[in-house]
Image (cartoon, rainbow, N blue to C red; front, side, top):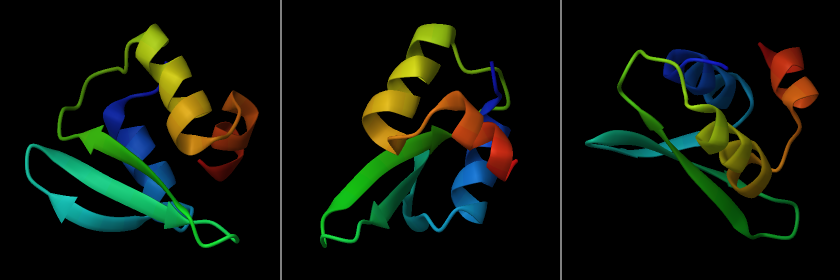
Length: 72
């Protein structure tokens, strides 16, 4: 499983906008139809738990593990 720092690096490299910080980094990405998808990233340095990671990929990032790996 990736670490939170790897998720942040993916978001920074893949056109996601950091729009707020606080207890987490909050990101959003505008889609072609004008809508936004959003996610957040912990300031922590640990590994993302498996179930949470799968949910982030599917529901928040709308990508596969292979898509994620290609950007890193």
